[in-house]
Length: 226
Length: 368
Image 1: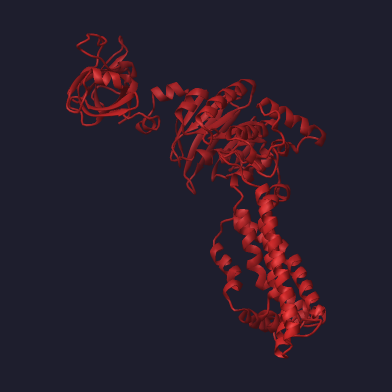
Image 2 (image 1 turned 135 degrees about the horizontal axis):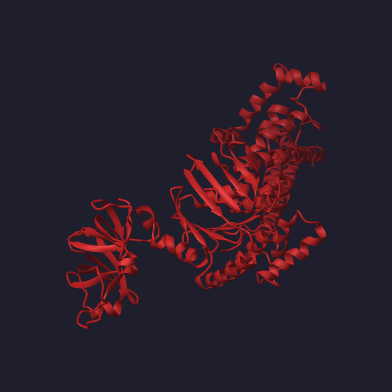
């Protein structure tokens, strides 16, 4: 069992979720409530990682963040190292590919809040932040939880983009999915099997927990029958 | 229409997204019903009052405070307006108990006084013992009461009710009518209620405003609006189906009547001297302004407007019967609803003739 790779995957998952979720909350909420020109195009752009092969996203990220690009050169001047083949590059790539997994459940959850509830909150004198924290988030919570779990689980299983942007540097960019691939390449099926089983059990446990929590919150926040 | 002494006045004009051309006013302690069909802009108007919709032009003043004035660039947020708003489906916070729903609207009070105020209002709307229930655990009527308690506990400057009885059963509705009528007597604030139910307006409203396609057509006491609509559109909105063409013949000030030529007959209507003899007009008679009696029994009431009508269709509906008939020389049909027993007594069937009286005091002249 490659504990280093597993820990790196967990670190990447947690970092991705922590950075992506707050942004996804505001983007998802805005997309749910606001109507503006170009909204459909923006929604399509945000959903692109769902349909594009990960290697294509990885290629574009490699080109955009690499040493030859102005972004790559600017980042290198700023932080002293390149983004590609570095953990920070993996975080950027992971955030990009997980945007639809985080934004869409949150957007659907906010869309599910009846506008009358939000209207009533405004007429009760409840301002933006208090409405978000005390009225909307408790109601949108199952969607937020789904976004969190999906992003985290997807990050653990991500392979193509990680390989393209990070390569396979142990302790730096070699996640558990890459480590399994490397073990299979070197015919170490025993180690690959253990890691695959661990990842499978972990994924099932996390998704089961998410479903259970979602159902529990769903029942608690059931909308009134009329 | 800035009525002096009025506690609330609104003038709004906009072309899109929903055309609006509305003027309403409502005094403290008065209940104004906004009546109109679906899509007439009633709810949008109410949302504009609450600050949830920003109209293109206009001015909204409540209790001397200007809430919205496009010309001066004033537009207070819903939070700043201090309205009590009961949305159509109540807008209760589903994750909060009834008590917390009411307390959620009391953030302007010191925290130690909120719970007692909320409990007092829940008691006032007969919800003692249900404070800890969530909305999903309450009936439709109880949810409506929570929403009302939440709106009123804020001591709002105005109470806005958006079709408040549409989501409850008939029995609950009757109870809630009484409760609202009782509450209205205690409250000194303007109340605006959106409804498409004329009976609700008749029961509860001091005045009603008819809305059609975003335009306010007529405002007045409900009985007056129903009896004397100002236009054919207004008449159709209040359910009048008997609308006919006519020509003014003469006025009879002594009897308070205006004589009209309608088809082959001369009929008398409530006097309206705005129309000189020779004017083409429309005239209306409500369903209950048509009287049928058996000639054989000899109890046909004495009066003018006795006409021989031809029955075109008879449709039994429970204990009543809907009759369509033809006035002599008039193309448009005459509709009426009479007890089924009377229809059988008169042997009414398609093609048969009977005598009818159109009650002159209920005949009303409309612009062509």
